[in-house]
Image 1 (cartoon, rainbow, N blue to C red):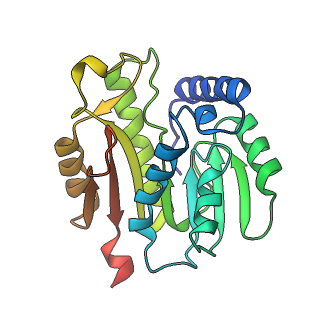
Image 2 (cartoon, rainbow, N blue to C red):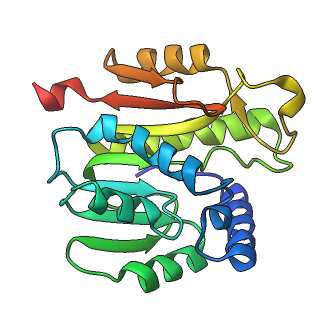
Amino acid sequence: MSAGPDPSIVSGVAAYYSSKLALHGPTPQGVDWNGRASHELRHRQFLRLLEGSPDASILDIGCGYGDFMRFLREAGHRGQFIGYDVAPDMIREATRLHGESADCRWRVGAEPTETADFAVASGIFNVKGEVPTETWARYVREIIDILARTGRRGFAFNVLSLSSDADRRSGTLYYADAAEMLSYCLNRYGRSVALLQDYGLYEFTVVIRHIAATR
């Protein structure tokens, strides 16, 4: 187990999302998304990772109030789901909404203590606040490494794209260069990498499979 992500960043992220949940409740706005339609569209990109594996176990890092679990069950996924979030308020809300069972568990934390077939992270790289960009980029790479370690068969994440219009970007959000991210992931995690940027949002999703685990 690594030392984990920077505690000061983690505490800032937890406070930010707790405030959004308090303001908006368990809604897409409560996890800082614009609305239901885009929230569902982001969820759907992760099906590329899970296709053909309805019984696979899933780790959702930054699970919020658990909406991805709901989406997966409606899509026919049956495997064990474990959601992690750094904001205790989010985990309490996820537990209230979805309950806990052998196939559905919720944990407070930035780094899982267990592994699963697949690991995903949605939206957790976007809100850097006043953290310097290079410090945040290092944090992003640390979380991607956690995804790689905890997803035995593969992992996926999304991030805002520098391909978005410059005049629409915010200084408190983090944007990544898609080509640089693709090259980084190919060099670090192997050749089975897909980058999806064709779904109409100012972001991209990266899907990575561990080849040795699927031979």
